[in-house]
Image 1 (cartoon, chains in turn orange, brown):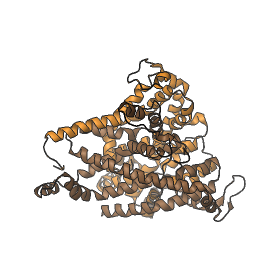
Image 2 (cartoon, rainbow over the protein chains, first blue to last red):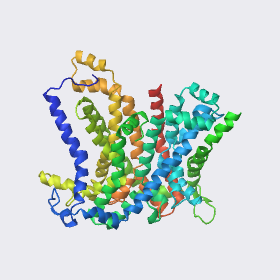
Image 3 (spheres, one colour):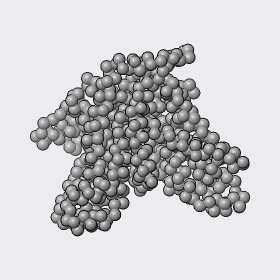
Image 4 (tube, one colour):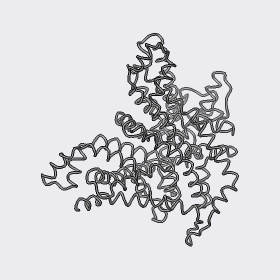
Length: 277
Length: 285
């Protein structure tokens, strides 16, 4: 037993119950509170003491929020940003990690070292120079302004390379004898074996792109192009509170759904795939 | 020879992306610190002027003091909580999935959503927290609206939002402690606290140190929460280094001074990054 205590005595049940209560209160109730809050009209939300369940149910708030803030547009924008960021990153780093791991070109270690060195740099140290570079390349108000910088992800290159390193050479040799090109070997042999690491890296890439705030804030000054996070922040001061709450709930749903669907991958990836959460 | 050509073909996209969006900006950031950019003519070299302007700005000192205060608060509050939580969860043999799900759920929420939700919870009038405190007959707080509690309010938000990752990483580390160590401690008649002090903490000290350094690096770059929740107020009590950097760059369009600030932040953080690197090397060896 890798635990401090043994057995399930009285103390165990007390601690278990307390933990259940504290966790539910700390992590679940605030979210339920928002979910319910969005159903209450603004006047009821301003009441003291607050009502627990809505006295007047206004299920229309979710629809009104959608229309008031034009959430459909921002969902679409965020979706394009997140999926594009994932696709571009994969297209860039998978072949690179494969080359570094299996083709071992001259200077490969130097390149890997230079990539990993960027991890030591605080992300925000590059805020101004990357912004100016994006301006030079005329990439503001363009999703590519998120996709391209996002593809330069050294941690994911490293995770993929480390996984590819464990694939036995004989497997690649066999493919080569069968006349497969390097590209075919990557697509037909390496990628199918690498599904677990690809899943982890993919999920974290999509989540990171969806959650990001500061880069979309800089890249999309034009309101119609913004992502959900940037738009919600912009709407917050002038939106009736019940509609804002509904908007916040709606904006969280895709990530919560993703989490429920891929919980095992995400929790496993967190500990296996390095510490960056 | 062919192999090298093919390899560089596979690497080309990554090399371009890293060169344009990572390596060149690093160099450019250093150059910009000594330049004045105006977008019309080519940038002027101004020597140490940008740094002098920063040191003359009273807000510069305020921002660093706030950031240091924030980092210390985050360590005092935010650092112990996930460890203690992990130690407790590791003992429980029921509802394991439920606990893991709940503690990680906030990590999945976009930070802007969390910030706006908590801003609503913190509302001194009908907000959730003061309502609960009033209901329990306890004194209420001004939370974000008072310069004495604004920073601690931000620390509570980021602790709630981020503790899931650290908790689960600690849990995994706790699972690697050999059970015999606890059994040996039992034979010596050690109590729970003694076992934590003499077995649990020494056995997980690399992970603890790693997360400590990562947390320092992350909290010193805090931006989204103060930007969304307080805008730096009240009375500049939540102006962090990054918030001031953002003001210089995107309110005043003074990219040179903003870069000088990045460079200083980078110099400070690289101490922690360097320590992190040394520790991970040692742990890996």
